[in-house]
Structure formats: C-alpha cells, structure tokens
Length: 127
Ligand code: THU
Image (tube, rainbow, N blue to C red; front, side):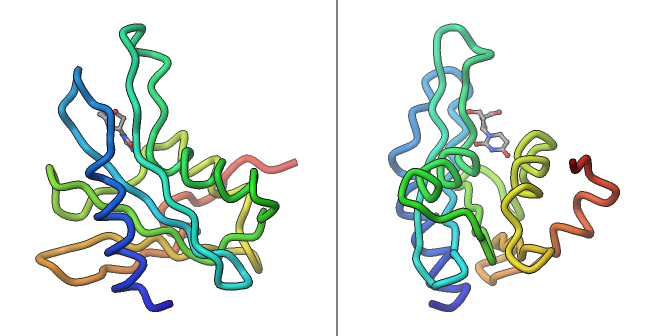
C-alpha cells in the first residue's frame, strides 16, 4: 500500500461525510503496522460540539478491529488542498504511533505531501 493508494481511499470515504452544517467533507485512512487499512469520515450533529473528525473516526475503526499501531494516516478534503488534522486529532494520533512517529499524508495539487507527526505535534502530552 503506497501513499497514493492510501490517499485514494481517504478520498473515496470523504464522499460519505455527513456534514449538513459545515459542508466541509473530510476522509481519512490509516495504515497500520501490518499494512491493514481503515477508513473514516467526519460526521456532524445538530449539537455541533458532538462532531467527530474523520481522523478520529478512522483511528477508532482501526482500534475496534484490534489495531493500535499506526504507521501513517492519509487525510483528504474536497474542500481544501493540504487538509491538516486539528489539534485534538494530533493528540489522539500521538497515542497510536507505531515506532515513535507517524506519517501524515495530505494532498497538494494532486500529489501526496508527507509530514511527520513529530513535526506537526511537538512536545505532545504523554503518560
Ligand atoms: N474536521 C475533520 O474531520 N478533521 C479535522 O482534523 C478538522 C475538522 C471536520 C469537523 C467538521 O465536520 C468539519 O471538518 C469542519 O470543522
């Protein structure tokens, strides 16, 4: 599974985003240590604060399927090039890094762009 394919999965699931309030669709796909993939999209609620981001939905799906070590996560939004994860999702990603770091893959002008989680979330909280 290369990062182009991972982004394509994120793109596909972004179509299922439930976003009647923001209209901002996001899809995410995680790549686990053993090369399994799990996708998620954002879904909103009339009680706005209950919204779940695509990244945390994808990570939760991986966990529900028994995978807690994540090598990479692709994030795609049809609304925005280079769609970055919010701070809450960066903190959640920190918990499930495989081998101490994680690749965050976005799309810029149609091409995969790779950032290290350690770059996007330095000095994160850990126990
Ligand atoms: N959103 C995500 O899915 N991931 C992020 O990292 C940031 C924001 C969603 C939440 C909400 O449905 C919409 O984008 C606008 O904030």
